[in-house]
Image 1 (cartoon, rainbow, N blue to C red):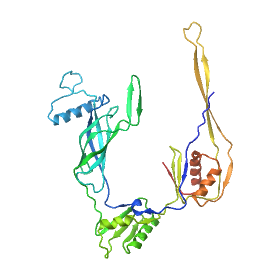
Image 2 (spheres, helix red, strand yellow; image 1 turned 90 degrees about the vertical axis):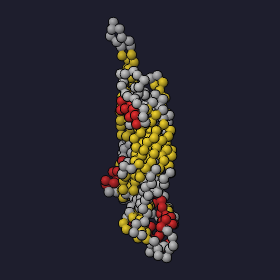
Image 3 (cartoon, helix red, strand yellow; image 1 turned 90 degrees about the horizontal axis):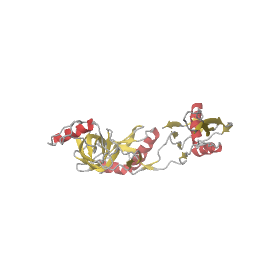
Length: 368
């Protein structure tokens, strides 16, 4: 008899009680300094028999060859030299991100994803593919051998595969042909955008900047701090933004608990607190047993005796205790209180959700 006890091997992660000083550049972005998404449609060649067998992909290859001046056609029933029937090609979507202030002649990384029935892009090479932006203009050209970071091997009826083999990357495989300049300063002002908008954090950023450059910054809203170049400062806007980015502030982090139910990971922020409450939670035990069953054939039936496994599943719940919890004011107190219950992080997920509904948990729950 075999028994399977399903338990969670997870972790409760808590932050320190004191928020760290961070640079302004690490918690803000400069308005106008944004990236641009590029995409294109291309063809990967050189696959070792793992390419697509669809007529769609074959026709794309034919059209591409015709644009290059090579006459060919596709007929699966016509065994002739002029017919293209290749398993070494795959139709792919090509994507890249053009960073802010990227210059003509620079290079970007390229991601290649198969859109047909190709089994693997291993060993393939992307041929000349224009990459366009949302406005339809070509900003980069992609080409080069793929790196998929894995492999797929098939022998007979079995095989082995590591990682996802239908998506690959070409490091520095996109050549920038057109620039997408950003606009840092508008009407003599630059704007810092908070990555995590907060009223108090925006106020602290403006206060820190004004202590160094008086009358320079003002908090427009929880997500933006506006910079004006001081009249007595002979620095360019780029220099001012660079020096402001190095100033350090202590951001005001809201009370928040992030829960990943897939991995059982719980991350609790600094300001998480509990009100006096009581918790009862029983651990669920699931047991699986396999008992062999001998199947005897009928006389003169020509059958053979067979041992058939019979699977039985049973579950039981341990006796729950009602445990009173004192008022907690710091995340360390919360962790200490939860550990005193002797529950697993999987149980903590259910407990935190129930506490939130009961109004005893004073924090935002984010479930991923």
